Amino acid sequence: MTPQDRRFALRMIPYGVHVVTALDASGGITATTAHWVTQTSFTPPLVAVALPPDGLVYAAVRETQKFALHMLGCEDAREAVTFQDGGPVMLEDGLLNGCGMSRAPSGLPLLHNAVAVVECAMLAVLEFGDHYTLVAEVTEAHVRLPPLERPDLMILHMRNLGETIFYGG
Image 1 (cartoon, helix red, strand yellow):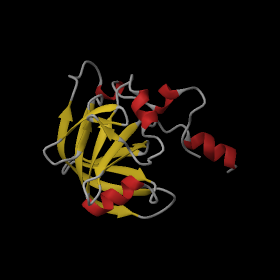
Image 2: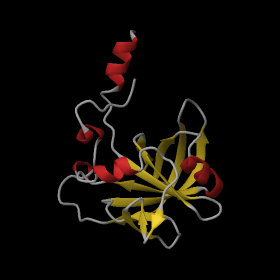
Image 3: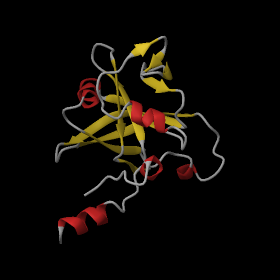
Image 4: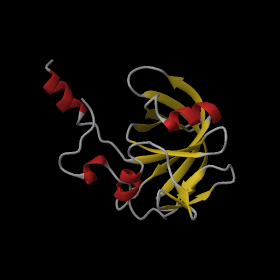
């Protein structure tokens, strides 16, 4: 196996573009873009999300044990880029980094432009590699747009961000 072959093979895995929002212990909002996301169980409904362990969102989720996972629509590249660095967010005039948001009954921030959002309760963390994998149960779902076609065709994918943007390898 060459590094080039490994990189090429791993880049064949399709990646969605999602935003994870969370509250820290003091109620402050954190947000980051996440690409490594998958459903892992139907009963109970479980998802796995990989986050860098040195990030603000990871720290907030570890403190509060909950987060919201946003499925961005095909036209929502702006939101993906807005939260890409996972740094501090700005809440001003009801906008999170300039994006419309509201609060779920749980208090979690929900982006208005997301096609759908699931609220999650963390169950376990796999602490391996440069991203740690959070395994969480879906506790609530908010569908913002009625499904007009295959649901997986409605979301933003990494390939929609440009010809030279890849993950994996």
